[in-house]
Amino acid sequence: MDEVFKALADPSRRLLLDSLDARNGQTLRELCAGLEMARQSVSKHLAVLEQAGLVTAVWRGREKLHYLNAAPINEISERWITRYDRSRVEALADLKQALEGELRMDAPAARPEFVYTTYIRTTPELLWRALTEPAFTRRYWQGMTFESDWKPGSHVRVTRTDGSICDDPEQVVLESDPYRRLAYTWFDNTGGCHGGGEPEPRSQVAFDLEDLGEKVKLTVTHDGFAPGSRVLPNISGGWPVVLSDLKTLLETESETGTKPE
Image (cartoon, rainbow, N blue to C red):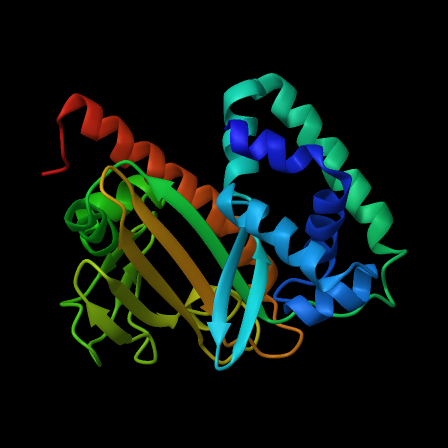
């Protein structure tokens, strides 16, 4: 936590985070141009932000893209903002966002991709189980379960809290490397069997696990959205909540020694 506060204390680093908040997935060159900062200075500031977990870098071909990572901020919120205060803070934040949204109509569109990194005190094996076993998913997905044999090409069935089942043939496993990487197509929760309206093309979500000893680094990348996607805003707000609940579940049960049956 000390590294987070230290990183946020510098105004130049806060400007970098603001730039990524406005348009995520920027290269070093784009960040330098947008902030009129020297390349060396931006590079040093990014290194501090990455070390603090506030920025996540993803390679796409030869380009290194930088993403704002809200996990450390969420942890600060969970630790120091009470439930009562949080509702007032969120109401004010929603009002601020609504008002500022009218002023940002001409701002550059964000890249249709979401990246989120969190560190969980667990093992790759247990985290993999939490991502793939219904006994786990129903607990941090608020009752929703994901079922599959998790082999490439296999179908992923989603059962919602009300008991309804979505057998979407387009929701399939793309990659499965146990304890390291899992990827599958993502259901369209605005159309088809998940809601009204015309369904969108399926996006893709990937989970990358990196064993760091006492912790596992989990990076979630969600991309492949259609222009003007209605799903993207939902997952941008939803993934941080889901992953926070996943982290709490695994770390709490690691401390108590209990596991889902």
